[in-house]
Amino acid sequence: MKTRTLGDGLEVSSIGLGCMGLSFGLGPATDRNEAIRVIRTAAERGVTLFDTAEGYGPYVNEELVGEALEPVRDQVLIGTKFGFKIDGNHQIVGLDSRPQHVRDVVEASLKRLRTDRIDLLYQHRVDPTVPMEDVAGAVRDLIAEGKVKHFGLSEAGAANIRKAHAIQPVAAIQDHYSLWMREPEVAKFALCQELGIGLVAWGPLGQGFLTGKITKDMTFDDPNDLRKDFPRFTPEALEANFKVVDFLKSLGAEKGISPAQIALSWLLSRKPWVVPIPGGTAVTHLNDNLHAAEVELTTDDLEKIDVAFTTLDIKGAPLSEGLDAAIDR
Image 1 (cartoon, rainbow, N blue to C red):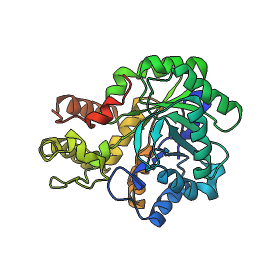
Image 2: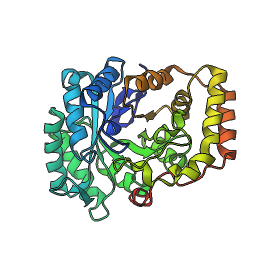
Image 3: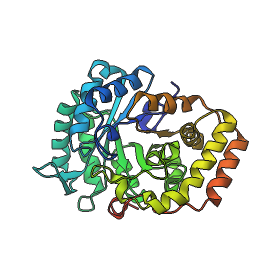
């Protein structure tokens, strides 16, 4: 697979794998053996960036990723995250980025991931009670010790990115970014360009909607499916938003590619330092998604997409109020 360079000289596959949905957040967990097969198949096909977090589960997704990647550990890069307070019942009950907590989380993550280093360590969400300089200093110390290789921030605002970068170079920011969630273009692109930071796009397929595989009668009432609380996934919003899928399917039919490949190749066209990390709970998803690295959208294609997505009236906020409130803007 082609590669891209994020900040701090970090070279990764042009498309990564977001591993969260294999364990958490999008309905029932994938059968463990099948989940391991998905992750290992991605590695065999050239994916080098695998994304997880202590908060996914919590803990279980890191354990899964660690087991799956142990045989090929030196051929891949693992990104994980700290920043939540997790109680004894494995419930996320707040934020915690105190330096000692960061160190404790890293030690625990290393064990779950079956490794001696974390290639890309993100702060999952900005903790307003801890100065960003202290957070960056804690990660800088872990980098000096060899336990972490690169520093990242997830959903951090420009001011905090600058503060962190002044203490320890930030290799990547991770933001919610897709055809129908384009806020990073306004809020982060100029800053990434200025500071030499890469952008890792989570949710690049609109939590599955941009693949065209979600039907109008699909419900998201599983207690483990975060989409049940997303305004964009109510029955009324889904009905209204199917014009997005209709457009992607029509363009895909013209070009002989899938809606998912359009969505991912569009992201790759935006900047050379943008790297999407679509999820995938089956090898068939990999077959579809990874081909996007070879798709070249023409100038005409890109113009059609821009016109469509500036004129389509997309209904509903992309995230729940709680998840949106945790974003640092």
